[in-house]
Length: 560
View 1: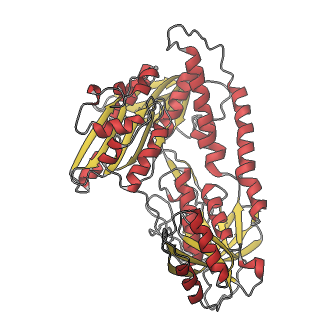
View 2 (view 1 turned 90 degrees about the horizontal axis):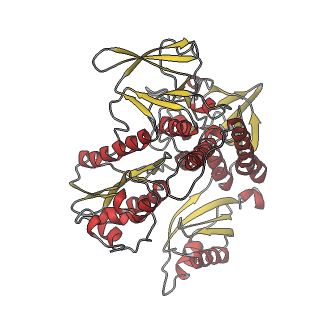
View 3 (view 1 turned 90 degrees about the vertical axis):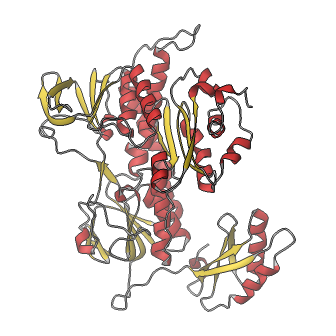
């Protein structure tokens, strides 16, 4: 429901209602609002609010009274803040605009913002210079996990983990895999992006956007003025200033996913999640992989025992590690590439392979926007400088998604897009809570984390206790024949509130969902210890880690 459905005399309002806890509450709220003059009310008990249309001069007191009168023995409703969902206004010198919100980009952050803005009744224009769908569906999450799963199947076929089960890997046809991947990407892009443009009805322009002044952009020959803008242009692989790199063929995380032949050997420069995931995938598909990084320890932000165990798991599959070295230069040689590195004692060593994959981070896509003309400053990383509400140094321009160089996760980008749309259009000053954002590295075993590490918690002044349930005490890991890792938990010693969880298990990405809720909701060690956990699931490791704070989980019977 938007005001446009009822004529220009009506606008949309949103009323906070405390006490809403279920779908019956939604029905009570909608009935109360409609009976007191609201038009087409839509209640959301999870967000505890009712949205409805009414004249701009209506008296809210009857609505407040009707909401209170709808209270019963089980629920007591209390109206809160009433907001008029009107877009922000231009200054008096420029009263006209072509749109309420112009969104530059067509990925997850952009679409989440556009849907939110549409539901607020705003006029939206989206501008995309390339392919709709952004990084995730086109060149990131979907194609990379499709490759990882294929590599896992190949690895299972080529290895004999269980006695009595004999199989073999006949061949790897990477070209056929890429063709199947493209079919999947095309279907998801159509369902999750292209068809939504027509469904919601915003205007989509194909072209490159460039700011002309603080409230105008140009797309080709068209000038567009807007009440607010959202920059959601994403990020691209960042290349290190390594001599010889420009003259040497190399892969990025994007081009590696389009290979139609498995390289015989592969040097991977970097050891973050992209390097680890793709490194293991190509090792399993038949490459001889060497991971190279300047840091002396793999994943220093992860609990040491888990990072070490992940390295051992990858090494057991044949991956070589060259850590604590400084890349000096790249050379093209017959049959491949040579990477010259400097060791910690100052010596130079040469590493050779058929192919080099550079996975050393990402950079924001802002070069073509002419942000200086819009009065948008950049930070030291080259990303738009933002306040906590995602507003740039131009108060009418916001940014969301990978272009901010925040956590590079599609679900964070979408949350930022929704929040930025509301802040830009309603003048709200909401801040995205990022203290319970889960992260997963989709190696095998998977490494997942949420909340504070032990070091972070201690740095913030917490007196902490920790619990660790190794893979050997998690029955699911035993039947998976997965000996590495376990579940590590950090809690505040006084309140026993769960501060963070890290897990290295066969399905850590599934376990971390429960851990995220525990951190977000402030659950305690007692909550985890006393709940009934499903046996023979990896999720049971979360309860075992809580028990491990005070006792040895290896000395417990099943489900004790």
